[in-house]
Image (tube, rainbow, N blue to C red; front, side):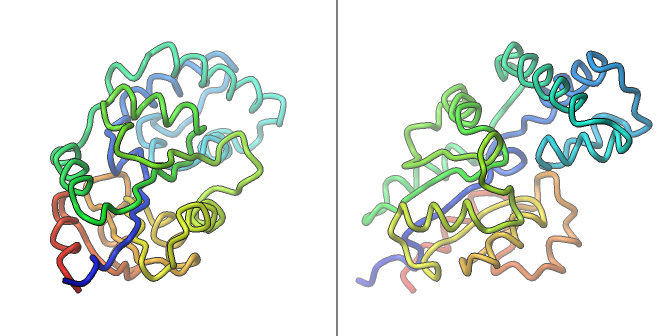
Length: 222
């Protein structure tokens, strides 16, 4: 029997594994009010998987860096206070991660997110899935540029010692697909998250998933 075609799978978090939109929206509303910025954009529509810097720049294009710093502090404080109480796993996520963990050889699973690493770990712990991952890493608060830059994906490839063509990146936005392609890994578009389906398909991911359980057949012997 030949080895499964993928030796590693890297997952985006928000919009792919976790439906965290309500907690993020509440924290954004609090942070914008704290800074005294009124945005014409409906707050819930700003929750699209973008890094916090990009959300703030879109909502408040004439703001200063000092305002962003205050906004970011308020957002993170409020988000942590909420304790991820409204965040839920998407259907089939727990079952899929458990099935992947039972494969032999077991694929190297990781989370690659725009969140801070500590926050992402707290979310995974809250949802009861932390134990499935060899790494949970984010770009916020680091020198690593967020997706669509491939830097985080490349770092996880090095850490897992996985050839790019034996790795699959699963994400729900165009940024995820572009980051995977830039890193040379296979890509799977998660159509249930923040991204628009037609935009994801135009990016030509290697696989299109209707739910995460569609991932399991991809591990049949190649």
